[in-house]
Each structure stands twice: as C-alpha cells, then as structure tokens.
Image 1 (cartoon, rainbow, N blue to C red):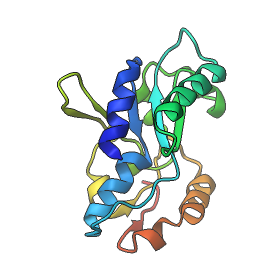
Image 2 (cartoon, helix red, strand yellow; image 1 turned 135 degrees about the horizontal axis):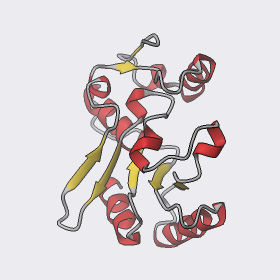
Image 3 (cartoon, helix red, strand yellow; image 1 turned 180 degrees about the vertical axis):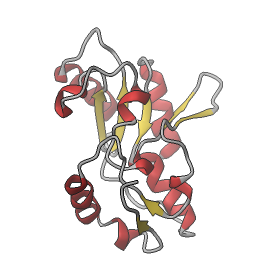
Length: 169
C-alpha cells in the first residue's frame, strides 16, 4: 500500500507534494513497536503547495482521480497554500512551512518518491522525536487542548503503548 500510494502521488506531478502525517508517522511507530503488519491508516494525507489554485474543489478533483485509480485507499488531498486560513496564520510559503505548524512534532513529516524511485523525506521539525517513542506537542501550534484531544481521539497510546506523551517545551 505504501509504495503504491507513493507512486500514485508522484504521477500527479503536483508542486511540493508529500504523503504526510500518519502515512509516515504510523509506519515508524509500527516498526518501533515491532509490529509485523502496518496499522491501518484512517486517511492518506497528500499535501502539496499551489498558490495559483487554492480551491477546495481542486483538492476534491485530485482525490477523485486518486480514488478512481485506487478505490481501496483513503485519500485526503490538501493544498497547503490555503491552510493558513484555517489557523489564522500568515500565508505559508511551502508545504514544509505548513507542516511546521501541525499539532504534533511527530506528525510533521512527509515522504515522496522522486523520478528515480528514491524516497525523499521532508521533516521541518526534525526526526528525533519520531524515533524516540514520544508524542510531542508542537510549540508553534501551541494549543494544548487540541493536542490533548487528538491524543485521546486517535487512540495512539492504545495502538502504540510504548509511546509517551511529552509536555510543551
């Protein structure tokens, strides 16, 4: 599923596009916990950056294209050029900058397959937290209630019991 999703995202040839959040984070947490099989993902977050067409309708068209090719994959496509509006931030300049405001440090990561078939990572907040069995609130997001709600709602501590919730630094 992961390679298939990476290949299909690459075929769209979107600007600054990454399969992000749980797509990468969950796979790492599964490996850290020694799971032989991947934990199912709720959605596959494809983020990209296109300030020329920031409409939600364009994202929906892209999701439809992906679902037509892989109806079994739960695609979610979001142009990060408009996501600043949701959070009251100044406009972002890239997918990496948008990810740098996501709720958890471990979630702010993306992967893509380049033209040579190599996997590239985009981790604007680094990789250390992702590999340290932690769930860390992002100080740039800085809304503790949102962080706490996500930890509860997503059931991360049940799915990956070795994880520890960190405090805002």
